[in-house]
Image (tube, rainbow, N blue to C red):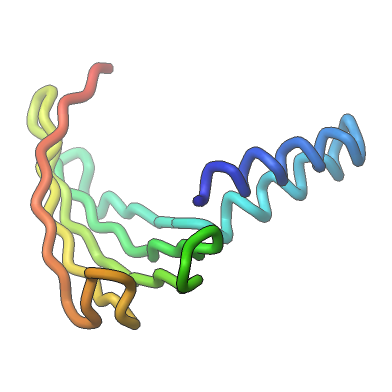
Length: 113
């Protein structure tokens, strides 16, 4: 649901103005949905980073509209071309088959410089 809202806000922003004000709508929408801040405490010594943020969505076009809100904290390690992530989040309310409570995620990604 986030992408259509993002696209609508971007389109409206372009229609409002070609310069600063059009981008303001786009940036505000981007900051509202799924922001995250990533900190690299000692990038020259240790390839670890810590990030904080939240996942937010609103399921509008369904039988029972619902909010999805999950604050999360992540620990990431970047080794050569791999990124290993461990995340803990707390789902604030029940949404469909997802139950309220803590959720844990582990991920592996590949990136290129």
